Length: 205
Image (cartoon, rainbow, N blue to C red; front, side, top):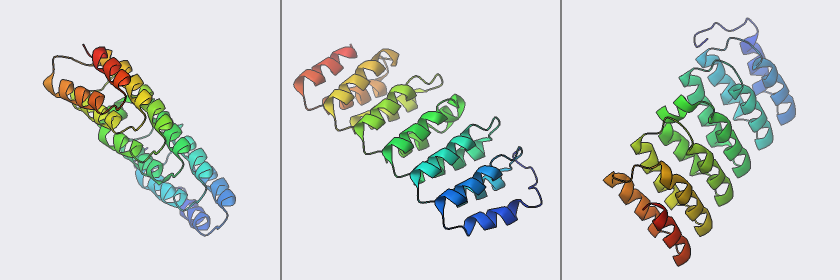
């Protein structure tokens, strides 16, 4: 639970983990701590703080998966995991971590802006586009979320990826809303290729 008391040895083990220089050995000890059934918000935040000291993105990613597989995560704990995702440097691991979060649809809807902010740190258009394809299927997105997503799509460099995303998103959008229309047209207009631009624009008709 969010306010559970730590087991007697929890902070001793966490201190030991913090003092271990080997990523692999540190990760093993943190895996053990993540097996504790009831982790309070503070306990999980302290574990994540230790995970951030690991250099290996793979180790961070695997530990993050353990966190996200926990059955009952509070909103505060989910926010803590997003902080960890920010700390992952690899585009692939970052995108896959965000994908794991997608099953928490209500959290995604409530914290859409910080999810989009995390995707802006992904340099690969491919990884970013693949995540946006999944993100747009979230059931709880509001108008403001669609506007943010359109702005994020606009910032993708690859014309084909941008066109594909816009064409996929267009049927989901309320075309009579002026803010959505403006955001969509702005995104389509940012496509350099005339053919891709035309295809994306027509998809919104």
